[in-house]
Length: 287
Image: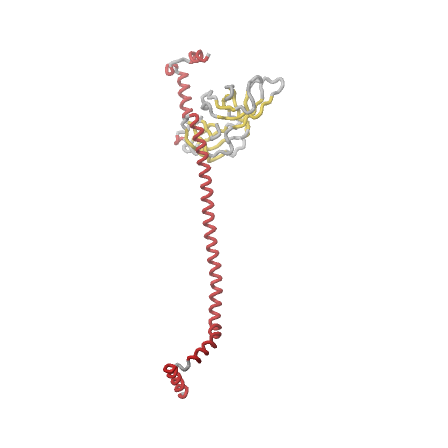
C-alpha cells in the first residue's frame, strides 16, 4: 500500500514538472469516451423521451389556443358581416323614408306569431317610444302592415298578408283605386271589386292611396302579378305580390308623421272653421 502511494506521488510530481504523462492521459481519455457516453445515455434518453411528451403537450396547447383564436376571429368576421348588412339595410330604410318625408323610427323584429293563420310580428318599439295603434310599418321595399297592439316596450304588427287585413291602394300608372286584401299567404295579395272594364295590367305598381286615414299615401304595397277574367262575372280576379319582404325583413320603420297628418286632416274635415273651407266646398272644387 505504501508502495502504491509513493508511486502515485512520483507520477504526480513527474507530470507536474516534466509533463511526461500527457500522451498517456490523452490516450486514456480517448479510450474512456465510450464509457462516459454509455454512462450518460440513460439520462439523455430519458430527457429526450420527456421532451417528446412535453412538445406534444405544448403542441396541443398551442393548437387549442389557435382554435380558440380562430373561433373568435370567425365570430368577429360574422359580426362585421352582419353589421355591414344592417348598415346597408338601414341606408335603404332611410332612403325609402326620405322619399315621402315622414318622421320615422327604426325598429327590429323580435318575435313572430307561432299561429300559422295569423301573420303577425313583434317589434322592439312600444309606448315608451311613442308608438301607437294604427301606425304604418315599412321595410325597404314598401308597406309591411300596421300596429295593432302596443305595450310599454314592444308592439304587435299585423302584416298586409293576413287574411283580415285590407289596404286602400291606387294604381300608379293611372290612379285607379281599389282595395287590396290579404290572402293568408306571405307572397300573395288580392285586389277586389275591380270591374272587368278597368284599365289594369300585370306589372302595375300599387301604392297606398291614403283613403280612410289609416295608411299614409304613396307607399309601395304590391305589384300586379296575375289577372284572370271569368265569363259573365262583373269583377276580375287580380293577384298581387307584396313589395315588402314580409318573411325576411328584420329592420323596420315605424311611421309617425302620417298618423299626425291624417288626424289633423280628419279634424279639419269635421271642423270647417279650422280649414277655412267646408266639405261641400272642397267637393265643389274637385268637380
